[in-house]
Amino acid sequence: MAYTLSALLDQFDPVYPEEATFKDRFYQLLQEPFCFERKNLKGHFTGSCWVTNESLDKVLLLHHVKLDRWLQPGGHADGNTDLLAVAKKELEEETGILSHLSIGPGIFDLDIHVIPERKNVPEHEHFDVRFHFIAADNISLIINEESNALQWVPLDSVIELTNYEASFERMVNKTKAL
Image (cartoon, rainbow, N blue to C red):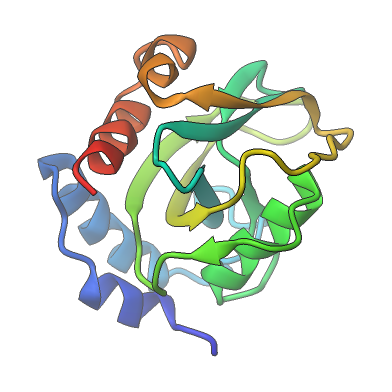
């Protein structure tokens, strides 16, 4: 079942003040043409997965080749307006995980972050919708060409590993509250 981003945003109750600001900006971007496509260089929507194990004490992160940072699996919508489907597709492509549990169709976290200029693509913003998934932490993972590494990270180590980035701190705290 596909969920429209507008409906998901309507149901999302921000936990942190910055998410309320992000939510407003997400609604604004929805009015822009090509907001689900990379050709919108003002910014575009992405879908990603905050993947925890069943015990909620580990998170699956990848070390992104181009950005040289630890991130959650995710990627561009490339025209697909169903960001939950985008997130699931990216999870499978970037980790090899084919069976996973999504925690409801709702949004786990919203974030807007700047992507630096690279080659012929100017600096722009990603409007990232993050969904919570649960997967077994003992299954085989398959790393793809977009990552240097892929690993389960103890929840208490995520904030330091991601250089105390606010969005990761939010997701860690939300996980601890589950």
